[in-house]
Image (cartoon, rainbow, N blue to C red):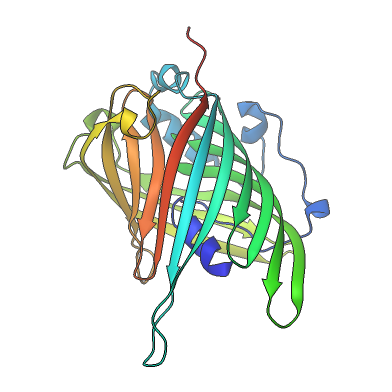
Length: 280
């Protein structure tokens, strides 16, 4: 599960807290932008900077997002082989049902129920995330329960939760109106986590991104209109950056996480629209 968590974290620029008892987590804020802006821990400078980048027309684009979408995320982990044993690949499936609520300024509230199924573990959880263009998470609230099958001790059950916030805004030279194949831009910020013991951990992000030729957006789901650009980002703050791939849906002003690829870990996402947006 630790490998799975690390792989999933590489897809989105958000940091996950150390585990804590779900009973000790405060509930997510009300589904209003003002409620999230009042939260402590989110850098106030980020609100203005991100709203400025998004521009005034992005809310109309976000209104076209599906109300409900299913995301099937499969993580493949390949173990190293030896002279006596061949390398093996195991797969973990995470199936999420996500509801999307645009909240102006480029921010979208994404509320998800998910299940996890692998050869040795099964689990379920809920997340509430405030995302900017689907790309950066300013707030992430998660509760989960997992059953793990262990060869020696049998079935082990655990539950926990996490809250993470974007606590320090750096800078970005992104201009959405210039998004086209070959366009490059950068993001710099940090995400903070605080465990129930009061311990604090920061994760630095120095994202270097490039847009490339894409295609028709209905490649991902037949309900999507328009075209997409393929976007690849690396967090150069890490010693070994793992490229993550996104699709920038031009009609929706939104980034869909497609997956990531490392030496022994591969994450692939598939999408299905369960409830399209209501026509204006």
